[in-house]
Each structure stands twice: as C-alpha cells, then as structure tokens.
Image (cartoon, rainbow, N blue to C red; front, top):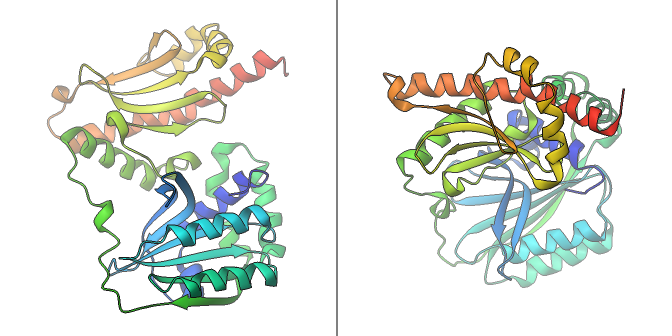
Length: 328
C-alpha cells in the first residue's frame, strides 16, 4: 500500500475482505482464506507485504491483490514485478492490481514478464477501480475517529453501485504439476497458539477495530494489534509463566505518554473496572485458564476484556497523546 494513502487503502481492504462479492464478480472466482497485509518471502529471501491474499475454493490457486487509490506509479510497478517473481513454480498464482489506471508501458512490461515465466503457472490482472466515487467516501471516513471508521464502511456498499469498471490481463500456464497453495499455510499449532487463534477469530467476528483485521503472526505465543499511536501496541500473549493476558506496551520513545496515563490512573482504574496492573511502561491484565470451566467461556471473557482495552483504554491513550503534545 502507498504511504500517503495507506489508511484509506487499509479501510478499502477491510471492506473488501468483509464484502468480497464485488471483486469476486470482477475476477470470476470465489475467494477463500482472505487475509490482509500478510508477508511472504520473496526470491531474494526478503519479506514482501501483500495488501490482500486469498485462495480459490479448491486451494489450488493463490491470489495476491494490491490496491492503489490512484494510478500505478513506479513504486507500485516495482512491487507488482516482485510479486510476479515471487510466484512459485509448483503453485498457481494470480497477481491482481486494483487501481485508477495503469500506464500501457507498465502493463505491457508486466505482461512480458508473465509471458517469459514459462516455468510457472502465473496470471496478471489489472482491474480499474471506480475511484471517482470510492475515494471521496474513504476520505470522509478517514477523517473520523479510528474507532468509528469500520462501521461506516457500509457506505461503500450503499452509495457506490459499481466498484470495478474494467478488467484485463495476461496469463502463462504450463503443464508442470502443481500442489495446493494451502500446504505452506498448514501448521500444527500448540495449545497456546490454538487459543490465540480462537481469540483472534472471535475478535474479527465481533470487533470493529480496524487493526484487528490485519494478518497476525503468532510469534512467541503472542500477536500484536496496532494502536493509533506510534511506538505503542496492544499485545495478546502467553507470558513466560504461561499466563494468558492482554497488555498495552510502550516503547522507549513513548515513555512520556505512559507518564501521562499515570496521571489519570485513578480514573482509568475505575473505568477499566480495576482489572489492570500497572507495570514498567506497560499496562496488563492476566487470565487464568483454571478459573474457567471451559475454553469457550474463557475466550468470550478474554475477548470482552480485549475490547475494553481497544475502546475504553484507547480513549485515554488518545487523551494522553494530546496532553503530551499540549493539544486542547
């Protein structure tokens, strides 16, 4: 995603993830296992972030989808080339660019790269976005408080009849036997990671906090949810003692913000129902699985507390940021 429009493009990605029918109609395929902003390893060994990835129903074809709310520029062109190069010989890959327009030179060059990839099963598609109607709505939503944005995305469905105006592409398929694109996604999760995955799935079903929908790596038995402030993140985790918890973590640069929150400690404790512990540059709440008769109940309770962090505590975080910057 482009830096200048990253929030608007993320919001459009969230809408598309929850309302995939329009893009499915454009490309003629039902999408499954849709994920936002997932990293993949390129041929150079470096990670490449993809705006949206998905598979088909059979799990035999992977889709890499890039969004741009403007014309394809040189940086987007380079990113699309890297995604094409990243396609594996033993998998079927479709690289899709959704943007206002694409220069004929860029399209022809991407088509040439695909055509020369005779050792791969690969396809490139360009879909023209109806940005004339989509962008003004996204700009209005982007001005709202971040906790209000996701519910308002339904305007894109109610007010824009046609999201995609035209599709063109080029493909190169061979007779190389391919394997399921889901093979690399399968993993035997530990009990802790399984619990975290269940928590994440429930949050995505019932939480309208934009950063919840981004792809999460379950590294070190934890996953992060970005806050609205740089150097401050929410983290759902199992700590070294095996305790399940949710914490708000402040990096060194954000220490003044933590101190601002400390000045509101009594009010925050009251609003958070005295469930939080104040640690060195972090605020945390722990859960004990032994206190629950079944995992489902524990996950429901955990998700309720996480939402309290994301919505109630986040409002104090915003106040602390404004207080530190001296904003009335």
